[in-house]
Image 1 (cartoon, helix red, strand yellow):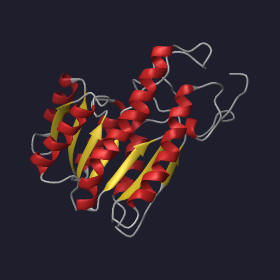
Image 2 (cartoon, one colour):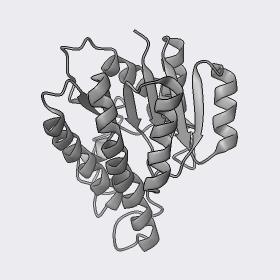
Image 3 (spheres, one colour):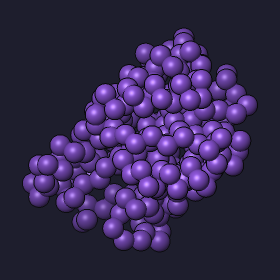
Image 4 (cartoon, helix red, strand yellow):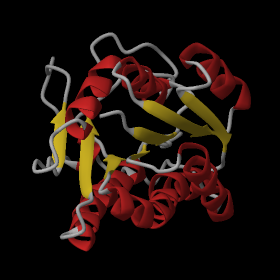
Length: 233
């Protein structure tokens, strides 16, 4: 069955690639991000019948509220909400980190995700749909002083809390935890990292399971070239 999928952070990287795979599998997508030009290029690629572009700053709760209203009005329902928008650190650790970077990471990686979940829940209860959160390997390991890692530990716990809140409603929650992915998230290429296509396949695997199947957490890591945690780096 074709699903209506809303993806935040949908203009590039993991979000855009998941959308591309979803449309290829017969689903329809609403893509939300701040970059109108990138969104419109994706809609042109996918076709106006299959995709909707919404300019949205996810840290603005009112803009998110409007985003959900537009998607529901356009497609009639929402089956999957993919809280994919995320932000990394500008410097390593806490002592050497930038205070404004801390604020931005918490707002995008945590606050905005909570707002997305709040507005998604009534719609996903109605459709017996699926809420997917993007965590990280960084939320399953200790990264010295990393505020970014801490925001992903939040996602790990919050996904469990949301699953408990939605228990018995027919809606599902999945937390996808990638290792390093070679995307524009980084300033340089990462040849040993995962590719966005790897995450897209995992995303579709999770959301296309039959109704009686729940995948609470899905870890997808690159084959290690060295230990996951190196205390010297």
